[in-house]
Amino acid sequence: DCISDFAEVLCGRSCFHGIKGLIRYAQGACAGMERYMGKTFEGYPEITKEEINKALDFCNRQILHILPEFTDKFQQAYSVDGFYPPIENVDWTTGFWTGEIWLAYEYSHDERLLKAAQVQVHDFKNRIDKKISVDHHDMGFLYSPSCVAAYKLTGNEEGKEAAIKAADQLISRYQPKGKFIQAWGSMDAPENYRLIIDCLLNLPLLYWASEETGDKKYREIAENHIHTAVANVIREDYSTWHTFFFNRETGAPDHGATCQGYRDGSAWARGQAWGVYGLALAYKYTRRGEYIDLFKHVTEYFLNHLPKDLIPFWDLEFTDGDDQPRDSSSASIAACGMLEMSKYLPEEEAAYYQSIVAKLMKSLYDNYAVKDMKKSNGLVLHSTYSNHSPYNTCNHYGVDECNAWGDYFYMEALTRMSKDWELYW
Image 1: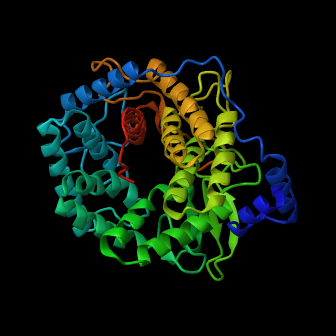
Image 2: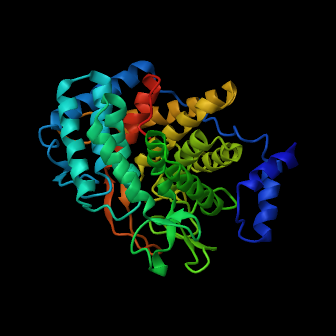
Image 3: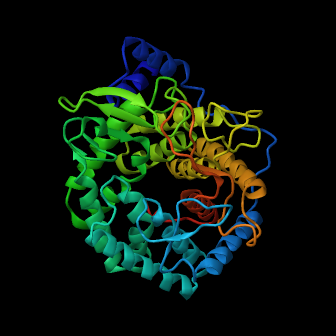
C-alpha cells in the first residue's frame, strides 16, 4: 500500500531536484503514511461559538464604522500605526477590503454594506476595462472576493462581466513553455520567467470562469499551473519556496528563491500558509488524491514550526525568543485552508484539523484581534507585509501592522466556523 500511495504521488510531481531528493521523498512517503495527524496542541483552549459570534459582531461594527471613508476609496495594503489610509483602486490587495464588506453583509444583511459593495464592484469593472494596474497575476486576489462574490451573493451582472475579463487578463500571463502563469513583469524578460506560491489562490477565478462561460481554456490553464507549481515550490522537507524560476528557452525547472522570506532556504510563513490553502483549493477543483497527501505534509510543516501561542513569526525559521515580528495573517490563511480541506477528509481527520483551527483562532481572537476602534481601524494586529533581511530583496513596510488579507482571512475563517459558507474562491 505504501508503494502504491507513493506511486500515486509520484504521478503528480515532475521535479524532485535530483536523485537524493527522490530517495528522500520516497522514504518520507513510506515512513510518514501514519504520521499525518501529529501535533494536537493538547491543552490549548478552542474558540467558542459565543466568541466566534462576538468576533464577527465586532468585525461588522468596525466595517460599518469606517465605511464612509472606505466606500469610494479602498484600504491601503497595510495600516500605519494601526490605521489604514484610504487609496485609489490600484494595489493588488484592494479586493480583500471589498471581500470584508461582503462578509459583513452576509453576517448582518445591512443595506449600507450592500450599497457600498456595489459601488466598489463598479470601480473594479472600471479598473479592468481601463487596464489600471492589472499587468500581474493577482487577478484572483482582486476579483474573487469582490466581483465573483457579488455575482454569487446577489447576481450582480457587472461583477460577473468584470470577473470574466479579469480571468482573461490572468490567462494572458500564461507561459506555454513551463506551463505556468508568470507572476510579474515583462513576459519576455528571462529574470521574470517565474511563478510564486501565492498564485494558487488566484486560480479559483479561472475555474469559476470556465463554469460560467463553458470555455475549458481557463480550467486547463489553471490545472497546468497547479501541477507545475506543486511539483516545484514544495521542497523535499515540505517547506516551500516563495518563487520558482524556469528556463525561458525550454520551460525546464531552474531554481527556487525567495523575495519575501528571510533567506532562500527558509520557509516564509505566509508562503507556507498560501501552500496550505492553495493545496486545499487545488483538491477542491481537481480531486487529485496526491494533493491531499501534499496538503497534509505542507500543513504539518507549518504546524510544527509554530511558537507557543500558535501564531507564526514572519518566517518559520524564527520561534519563541527570537527578536522578530509576527505574521498573524499567516495563521488566518492556514486556518481557512484547513477548514476547506476538512470538507473532503474522513471524519476523524476532519475533526483534527477543525480542532487545530479552533485553537489558532482562539489565540488570534484573544491576543491579536482589534477590540478598540480608537486604537485601530483594522481587524487583526501584528501582521507583516514585507520585512527586509540581509538575505532578501524586500522593502520594509507593513511590519507589525494590520494588513488587508490578514483582516479578510480572519473574517473568512470566522464565517466558515459560523455556518456552511459558499466560497468566493
